[in-house]
Image (cartoon, rainbow, N blue to C red; front, side, top):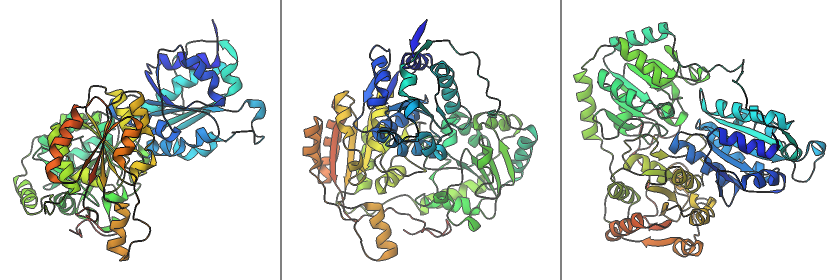
Length: 551
């Protein structure tokens, strides 16, 4: 049977079990939107294409299924770029579909023409410019396979308007044949054996777990692996929730704003076992001194990451879920009591805490959100001080419960991501912990949440500054330059969008307002008037060793 290219696209998306698309219509995607009218796919109309990309990203991180976003050509497509880059940096499976001017107009600087495949070349795992509707079914199948296998990432499909309008036969694609793409799963047995020898010989091992643990669904294997070795576990920002934060072996987050005991443990370990992590500069600090006494085992599905930033003694290329099983098959239980006792001493001497002077502190707000939700919520964040306080003071114990922009550090990510999370996990409590600067970058998406009755809770840490930039200015420049904010009335703004708005100015209001927000069936924005010049501590100054922490 014959269908238009747009209809073939929709049928192909349905064949991939796509249930939600986040998008914004425009001229070159009109045939696709017309085909969507009768589709068994929910479309969520965001208020900006960047919001659509971040919502699809949040949906993917929370559900483990690929997120899908749709935009028109030119500015619609370029507005997706930040969201695509964000997904690329954090290895999020995303399929971005863009409209394009007809083939006859390509290369002529036509109205709303942009070379989006060229623009996004460095930030996509793969991209397609569709030439013929007969290719569409195969391309969609390939795109979803590439986006979700190996190290996940974004794939772009750019569809000229004449391709989406032309009628062609819909043929269900056969088995995929991608000769240049062979993602690994099981590691080489020799590599695994060498890693096991190093583990057996170590006295002070530390497991350094990243986002790959969550992506591969290896959280249960990591827990059993850590308990088998009785080895402490430090996580990256992206790894939060991959290991229970309440577990005695948990060191919390390491790096620039990590716990002191996590950083001390990495500095003094004799073996560092990196599991699905990429040795980001915010984790390592000064490279020459990072884990300088340790042998390094690096387990990662992406061979390009192994040895890219630090010297690796034992590379193990494979899916971390499978590799951890391979290791546990040949490892023996161990005790390591002296090492654990030393770490417990550090935990007692250097707890994560703040000076509680009874003013409204952002750390106290986040602790109360944790208490009110029992740690059983999906938390998104924007980017800045509030993001680091969330990592420090909300104890994550479940995978896919912390959704934040890590590698790109995208302000404006949290609210649209929360929309995607709530759309994908409708029964869950969802909080976007935001800064008063970041929230205003995509605040229009509050209207999307109201429109689709998605009861997200937005907690704005309102300190009147671009807080993280101000902190760096205070510590390293001794003066503030253009970081003081003039803010709107967030309560009135929320009400204008049709959401509920609350303001909290003192500690006694915290619990009752949060209780009311969580009970609400509507989107809620809470303006927390927190102390204006509070700093995130501890902090490793840029370029310094992990052992040289401030605070």
